[in-house]
Length: 281
Image (cartoon, rainbow, N blue to C red; front, side):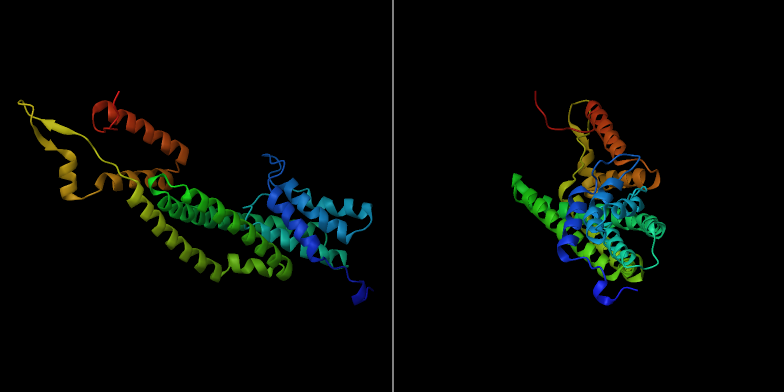
């Protein structure tokens, strides 16, 4: 039986090296067949080299990480940290094998992906973009610089925090993300994100019509935009927004196809005189 002095322990330098490999290489050799498998394996190499001095033991241990893996790269960092903790326990003789580690990874990558995609891609990034757009008024580069700096800092230190929390607390670190407290936090952030996106919509989206009806004498007797403004200012903007939401949320049309449809509608609208881009040739 190993004594306390014989226990293998991962040092901070090794863990940091492992984290950096995941941060920079999570999508290394990315393909539809393997997704993040090779990036995961690369991040585990410093861990295995530290825990298993013999090359044969390293080769045996790395087979646990050859299975398919794919999740949200940012929140998925916590899974890599948990794996490092489990690998350390396995190296110290705990009843953990490669199948147990793979079961953990397979069980967490789906929920973490769902949470990460909605929280990061669907909430955090739109919030940052909304703030950046507001700072870019008049063509100022401040908004772009702010977005780049803010995103890099949040991505790096956020992932680093999750990695070391995953290593320190093991699978308990996930309970906050998938538990009731995590759900409440995600709901609150989602509300803030909706407010920011709504502010961006009101500030940057402006759909108007140039349609005017003229009488036999050539005088305008109906200016459609003026009539709409007297009824509901910004009505066309709201209708276009609701139409795009209906397509993507209810009909599951992708954002790319939605944008292409808007381009077609705009072109047709210009041709029939409903829209006026204000261009002169």
